[in-house]
Length: 253
Image (cartoon, rainbow, N blue to C red; front, side):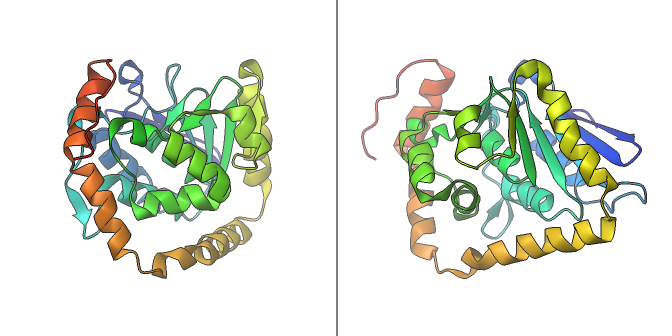
């Protein structure tokens, strides 16, 4: 694999985002490699998977220069397919977030079972600031993890929230000083590795299935509004402004 690294150490498999020069932005190749990593049957010794990232940024979201529009299946984008695979992986997944997790990076972290973050990390969805909008699937996860009040703040304002606040709100599992991040994460990882694997599989499946009730809500009209935003002139302007490091001028079209 080119953009992610995989290591197996006893009961723990580590999946590392390895595109630090691009702030670990998710491009098609990285998404395909992540999907492959979470589509395989766990090795017999495997008990837990850790997602981590190289460099100062955990993940800045989808690569705007390679904006992904191809649908992997009806109603689901490539990133949705990847996140679904992570959320439904047979064993627990722990995200170690050393730096900012923005937009798709925020979703990547929240689709893991546990998020352990550095005090220096921030979480956010800046889509409203560049004229884009999340899909129903992505917004559903944010609502499950953060609740309606925090979800409104994250989505409608678009400003990132510090990891300390995310922890206080119960959105992430742990927050630690940067130099204690690995030790804090190891406490959870080691505990998971010692627990009964059949119990872990069953209880993870239980939680995922019981949280899936929103999937059945009719949302075709909402999907149409979200798609209109993503295909708008404002979206094109917002992306170009972000890439050009200037303020966007939105027209409402």
